Structure formats: C-alpha cells, structure tokens
View (cartoon, rainbow, N blue to C red):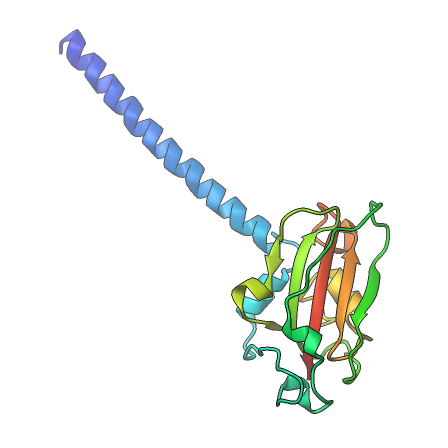
Length: 191
C-alpha cells in the first residue's frame, strides 16, 4: 500500500468517525432538550400532562355561552384573552405566592379533581415565554393535587375557584429546581 493510499484511507476513516461523532452529539442534544423541556425525572410539566391526559381539551368560551364551567356559570370575558405576563421583582422566591387576577364565580377546586387550564409561563425574573397553552391554541386537562404536576401547582390551585385567573410565583424548590417561575393560570373547569 502506498503512502498516498494510507493517507486517503486515514482521512476517510477520520471523516466517517467525525460524522458519527456529530450524529451522536446531535442525538444527545435532542434527548437533553426533551428531558429539560419535560422536567426530566422531576414531576411532569404542564405540557407533558397535556399530552398524556385522556380528557378532551376545552377552549375558553365567551360570556353567556355553554362551557365546561357552565354548571357554575359563564367564564369571565377576561379568560378569552391571552394574558400579558410581566416579570417579578426581588427574589429569589422562598415561598409560593398566589395572586388572584380575575375572580372566578365557579366551584372551588379540590385536590384529586381533574381540571382544565390555560396557562402561560415565564422565568420569574423575566425573559421569553417558556411554555404556553395559548401558543398551542389548546388548554390542557390534568388531575390536581395528586403529584401529576409541579408542587407549586398542586399547592396553589386547590382552593381557587373555576373561572379564576391566578398568578403563581413558584420558587425553584416547588418547580423544576433550577429557577423561580411565574405562571398565569386560567382555571376553566374542574370535575
């Protein structure tokens, strides 16, 4: 075998190895993206709960129409409009803070119920939207208070009324452990 053939074979082997390494790096990045996006081995995020729920999604209805909350009255008109979520001040958060933005008139949500929500999530200190049912044009349905969602939701949503829009300022310890979060959550129905 000539020196030239050996050099060509070596370069070909290096090119193939580089291509395989690049493909492996890409695969690892895709896996990491989906693990981080879904909360890893932590409790599932609202997004993953939406994809695993067997209940049909529910769109917010205008005032006066039939809606999931119809048994308790109509949903407030504010819940038909996507919220503008502003960053928090101060921090880091040391406890869960629940702020009622729109007062609901429906029944009180209880742990163990299946609840339909719209939500929008940003980092507490600000930044781009991390997740939103509004961007998918589809609310999601999940059991509440049973460990299916992050602790901040399981602790902050029971006791609220259907038809409410609430702001949940969730410390990292009650979320995904990496940062404080701010959610604006519309409670559309509870069963």
